[in-house]
Amino acid sequence: MFPTRSDLMGRYLGWVGRPFCTGWPVVIPLLGFLAISGLFRWTNLDLWISAQFYDPHTRSWPCFFSAWCTVFYRGGVYPAFALAVWSVGLMLWGLFVAHRRDWLRAGCFLLLVFAVGPGLIINTAFKQHWGRPRPHQLTDFGGQHRFAPLGSPGELSSHNSSFPSGHAAVAFYLMAPAFIANGRRPRMANA
Image (cartoon, rainbow, N blue to C red):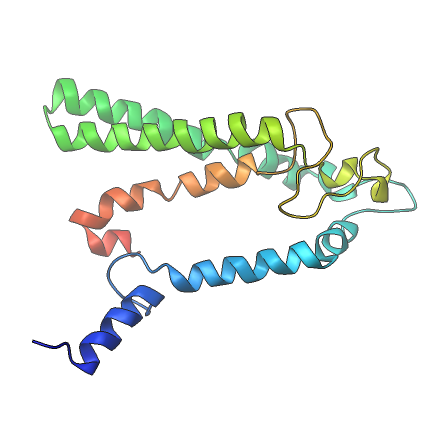
């Protein structure tokens, strides 16, 4: 009739994020995200981290033009694009060859997440209208724009603002297959 103490504790720990629990824990990652965001919002940590990569003597960003940075910056989006192309292939294979609706739905899900998340929400809605300058565009580092704290729109009018990060959006998109595998193959989803 009434839930026992262990039932209530199990429900609470499942919601908070007990290690190796089933489902998707929410509270602990959300609290961590809010704490780190507050740290960046109300301190100079953002500018301090950027200053570690800036050389004031040459007024340049030496790491930005290194080969490894170029590979990660330019090539970092290709795995997400490959997953989106693979999702189209999965849809077509499920529709015409294997005649399996679950493959069709999985491909549609992956393609829709890619189009709506990184495509529509991040790169079209936010990035076009937020205007937060990148570190190399700040007056602190020889640029022409004032610093905008985390969560505040900036004065930049071009589409290439730093917030939100398109690279981070496509990196998070790479976790989308876990949502498909979670229901049928929980061991694969938790890997």
